[in-house]
Image 1: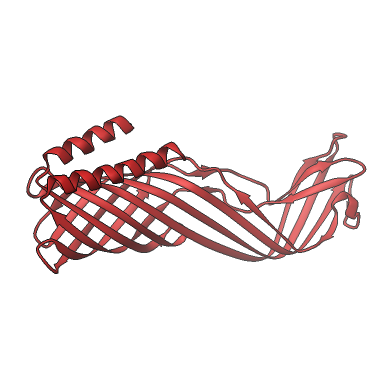
Image 2: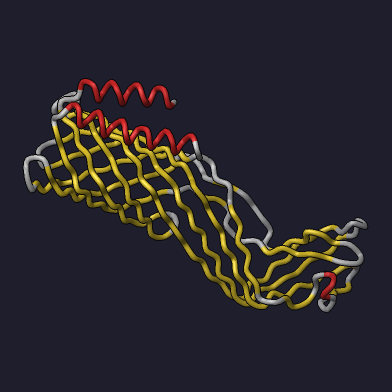
Length: 274
């Protein structure tokens, strides 16, 4: 895939008469509340109004959920083979999910003097996703043979101290559809300010899981250890919003080649060290 991408890029660069470079900032709504995305991009135009574009974006998203008076019940089996009905309740909880990804767009682009449209795909390279869960007044009890126990702390039953846990989620590479458009305000023949809109939609999920809210890591007749989990089930990102970019266009093949190869080297290095 890297070889194909390099061939397309260098071929387009060698024969391009016009090129365009920009720095931009995107702000929009997403699956995780608000989305902030700074980035750089470049485009080469083998034809007057039609060309290819790529670049590198860094997407940052974060969402928080809160809840009160959560009560749940599930059946577990101890080491002796006895079934225990496990009940737990949480007075208040707060969970946060933060996701940061590098995104590499590969676009087809149509342009006119004061307007452009583009569409294509994006490859998302997740850097980290952290789920943080904090809770107040966790109470647990176990019922076996019709008897409920809620005051054996060494067995994990009773009222627990308030606490929090942070979990790192391993993510898959994302493959997204993307479209964008914008209006140019020219300062000079080469320099312009561009205001536009965009939409991204992932074709696959970054993760998918189903964890119990509270679970026993170890349960014996002498001791027990419990673990509290967050409630995030899956992540399939999307985003819609607007952007602003400062764009510079040139017809210099040497400038086009130099900047394009530099950006390409950054993308390849990112994919290799991920």
